[in-house]
Length: 318
Picture 1 (cartoon, one colour):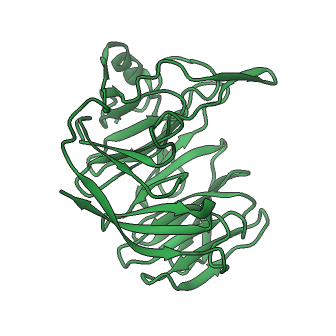
Picture 2 (tube, rainbow, N blue to C red):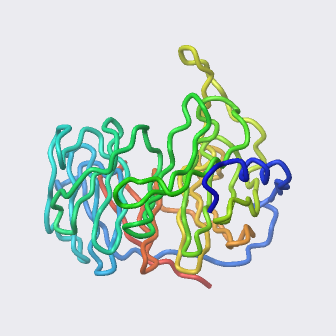
Picture 3 (cartoon, rainbow, N blue to C red):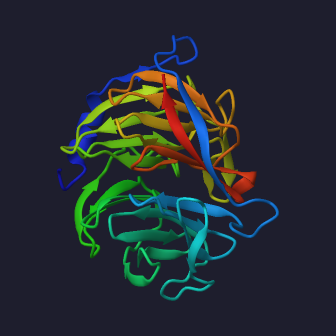
């Protein structure tokens, strides 16, 4: 991958943005879900409000709990195995836990108010903090030596940074070709096994795929929205409508995109795209959710009861 963003900007200047009318297209794939597990309920204290989730190959589920300032480990049946962390800014502590990812051996967690990435082993023992000097908006881990983060673009354009386990930067990807204003380049991102990056813009009707050489392969418009509502807050004019909330990949490289306000069912409709950007299906979740996560066994995790409950579903394709 290139170590500067010039190639990204050149590619962006010639790429064709392809509109896609998902509501008029014939469904090419039927996707349904079957509930496998539910963790947390209104009458227990398993989860107070989860913010991030990850699962490993052994079936253990890890959850960041924002109201409990903790990292929790559940077994495949939903039983709490261990809990770590407390309120604070010290090693292994949290003030506003947010993002979570896992590799074969370690867990990677972020905090909205504490810079850097906290690393834990699978027994929830704090190991180290990977330093970083800017707030992060997304985190995904390909291996312990390939950690990708999305850096908040405020007030300037954001970028994706790929670094090793010590925090040494390997590549910086300037995916956005111009400064369209604060937060307009905010994205949720995913990384596949071939090194392709998928981006869903939070405040623009854009979903994109980039290759590891810095070339934008396609850009799709699913909603037909040209502009989102803006509001002046202090000295800045900021977007107030979320187009896409999150993305995740299944085991065949299909892209799942959680839609926001402009969907038929806001925060419930999930658009399924092929790796080439072709719309395949729309899956409507039973409950609203702030994020979606698909693990390596192809199970889908979403929230219910405003974050008190974590739902695990099997994906079914027909």
